[in-house]
Every structure is written in C-alpha cells, then in structure tokens.
Amino acid sequence: MAKTPVSAGDLAAGLCASLEQDPGDGSSLRVALGEVARAQGMMKISRETGLAREALYRALSDRGNPELATVLKVLKALGLQLSIRPAKARRTRRA
Image (cartoon, rainbow, N blue to C red):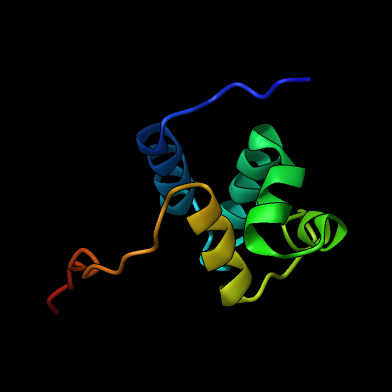
C-alpha cells in the first residue's frame, strides 16, 4: 500500500503540537513520532536510519523509551531536525 506524502512543514507542525501537549516526560512526542513514522512507512524509516524495523516499532510505541540518537535518526529520515529554543518565561507570583 502506498503511503501518502506529507510535507516536512506539516510533519513539524504536528510534532510541535504534540510537544505543547506533553506532560513533561516525552510521551506525547514519542507517540506522535511513532504515528508519523508508521504513516510514512516504517520499512522506509528503517532503511534510512539503519535501525531494525522491529526496534523502531518498540522504541516508538506508547510503552517505548527511545534513545535520543534514535529520535534524531528518525527525525532526519523524515526530513526534520531537532532545535532548542528558550522556554517561555513563567509568571511569578509576588507575595
């Protein structure tokens, strides 16, 4: 079955949205990344990352715990990259 191509911009927007909803443990991003990888074709992602398909399914499952290197390889295979930016300033309460 042919996979529907999705633009890198759309993929990035979806993954960023998952991060905004993340409870702080990376679970939302991991699950979203797994869904995107499956939609794009796990065999293709496996070939491009050099990681076994089964290992990718495990790492990107709702119970997985992928290493940062795995996340970076999957993002690269999807035409994406990870970037870091300052967090939004938190409001502090004055006594």
